[in-house]
Image 1 (tube, one colour):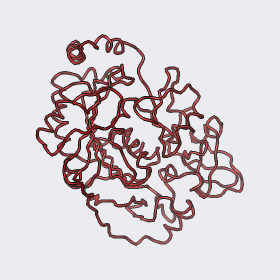
Image 2 (tube, helix red, strand yellow):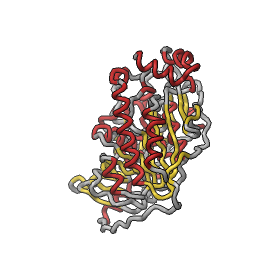
Image 3 (cartoon, helix red, strand yellow):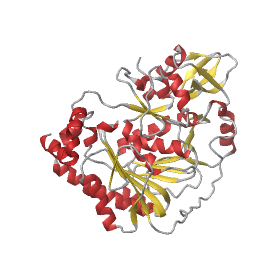
Image 4 (cartoon, helix red, strand yellow):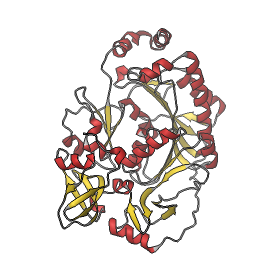
Length: 440
């Protein structure tokens, strides 16, 4: 790490000693971001049993104190009320300035922290397309999209150039959180340290520029790209952006209006450990051309059997995921509005997986309940975060319910949906996915 530290000394100058104090400190910044699709910031604060200190990077960010361990086992985490996220990692989406109704592409999206942050800002309006090129990571991304109750997303496992060429000019805003050398993660990830070299930094920079040049193809005229990394190296940050602007004179850096971290390239932002997070770089780029709406795509309606809508209405109230349904194989999807053609893009999920056709019946899917509020479900039971019942449910056990309940029933923790079961005879047969269950 001597070469890395020499580079940091050259980058930071007089601040290098302060950087070293943080770099050698065992305390690592941990944080969570409240998922406002399912829970307000004020509500979650009342449910957490630790002292609250907010982060400077987004309004929903909260530091996790050192003494709090295994927060992923908290029932509120299972319910998607929050996402555990390194504090400075929330900065890039803030700079993207998402508005309800936007069409947004998260091009390098796994594991899903920034995608679900975008989804919360969209507030179930517009479209989020979350892509990840590595298959196993794409599955993790999908799991987080489900857990946090995102219903207007497409999740794909596709090469950036293929995706962006197919969807030319479609997106209002694009996030390129590029794969990088991860210098900002060294304190919490020894593997990133072991992989680091100057040659690795240079290869990352070349790949990042290539991804950024792919992303511009999918951006509408007048649209915005935010490029971000979790590394400190100038080659991967200022160097990539300088080269991109040289190759693309129709783009310019724009003031994102944030004041966290410190400025570089005038309006870009750098975050170091002494700024309250492990490390990040982000910059907002505007395509300087006539501001035109993104193109629209027409989807031919397909006849859906009546029993599918009957199932929908038997489980949920007023069809909370809309009326545009599609059946692919044995799966029933509720599609988001203004969906483009997804053929050839290796889509893992589009919209909400409403249910699965099994022989002569339809069974609802976990994703649908995670996207629904309690009052949008025909039946629900609600338990306190500290109750024995919610612990048993997350462990996979049957739980006792009122004998009047019959049929598919949402299970909630403090009015936040965490999953579902099937009620009969005073018991709730557990339908919480086995891979998500707690071990104790």
